[in-house]
Structures are given as C-alpha cells and as structure tokens.
Image 1: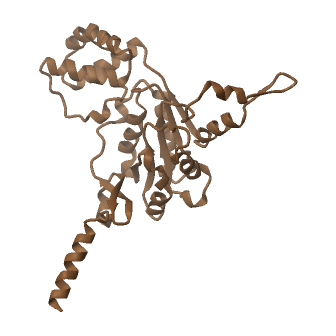
Image 2 (image 1 turned 30 degrees about the vertical axis):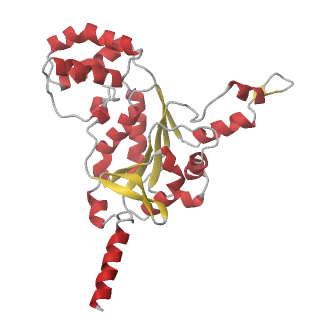
Length: 303
C-alpha cells in the first residue's frame, strides 16, 4: 500500500506540472494587476490569471499635454470604483501619444480604491467569458486592458469582444469594464471597396451599407471614445524637458539638448511622448545622467 501511495503521489506531482497555477486569496489581496496567460496541458491550452504585485511606474502627473483625455478617463474610472454607472473606454490615435500610459496611470491613481487591471492579449479575447466568470464574484473593480487592439477580417476575437461589450449576458459583470487602445478608430481595416456599399437616396442622402455598419458597430459599443494626436513642436520639446529633468538634467542641459531633440524626431519621422522618452534616455545616458529608476513601460507617456 505504501508503494502504491508513493506512486500515486508521484503521478499527482507530475500532473500538477501540467496544470496552470491557481490564485490563492493572498494573491488576490496582494496583486495590483493580472495577466491572462495560456499553458499547454494534457487537456490543450488552458488559460489562467497570473498575479502582478508591482505597480507600473507611470503617474497622472507625468501626462500633461492630454488634459481633456485625462480628465475624461479619470472621471469615468472614479465612477467605476465608486460603483456608479461607467462606460467601457476606447482610446485611439497616433502611436506613442500616451494611450497605454494613461490607463496604467489610472491604475496607480485608483489602486487604493480597489481598482485592478487585467491585461488580455488580442489572441486571447475568445476567453473573455471565462475571465469575467473568474472576476465576477470578487469585491475588487477590474478594468480588462486590451492594448494595441485591431482585427483583421475573420478573426475570432472580434465577436467575443462584441459580446463582452454589449451582447452576451454571460459576458457582463458589474465589476468589470474594458479599456482598450488602438491606432484604428473602428478597430478593423477599412478598404476602398467598402465605399461601394453606401446607398444613395432620391433626396441625395448617403447611408452606409452593411459592411460599413458591421465595422462601426464594434467601436460604437464603447461608451467613451478618446482620441489622441501627435504633439506640436513646443509640446514635444516640453515632454523632452520633462524626461531630461527626470534623468537629473539641469535647465541648461535641457536648453542645450533642444536642437538634438528636434533632429532625433526628424530622423524618426514622428513627434510623440515615446520619441521624447527615447531621446531623453539616449541624451541623458551619453552625458552621464542617471536620474530615478524608471521602466520602459512608460516610454509612450506624454509629459
């Protein structure tokens, strides 16, 4: 019997290696965010929540050239954590302009009020129903974070997201919202041939056809839309100055770096918070500036 028990223990230990880890109550209490992961098992790919205990090092005070967008998402998030009606949010616009950083900064601002972030890759959106089911019984407030979201024709996650936003009763929960970022306003590619589906009425009005309506229907399910635009030159230089100051540069250093910052942006064909952050890292490093520890996850934050 002892030999059989030993063999059974060994079998169970090996089986556990194929199963995803389960969150403990301590994990739920100490984690500030979660990431939905997939693990290959004997039963196929199994999804599970991975706890993250460290807050992202980006704050609302670092985002100074997007006041309108910041005020809107902060107000919506405050309503959400106070258990008041709030909307799912779609942030769209130019790359590197602070969309993702704004969501992470909101987590920092409201984590003490019970806000938690759940990062879900686009390829895993088909699991939204399972994710919401795990979150629905918790006292915390969860923002499901889908970064750089866009779909190609025929991708399965498109319909799962539509159900989670507005359709399926099983995919909705009072303590869950979806915060998504995208470079595409309507999340789907838009082709010239789509214009052929527009209908012209006798009185001259134009109505979109079924193809266009289908593409618009997903983004319309987000109650709050926030658009982001590339900064002007003086705004870009202000962002550069902010991050150079972060690395310990003086006002004289910032003035001396102005020309190099403009050339840096010109060579990349873009002015954005991300470009400003990358320049400040390069310039500060070359001039022996250390500054405060900071993660690259903040690189697209506008200042």
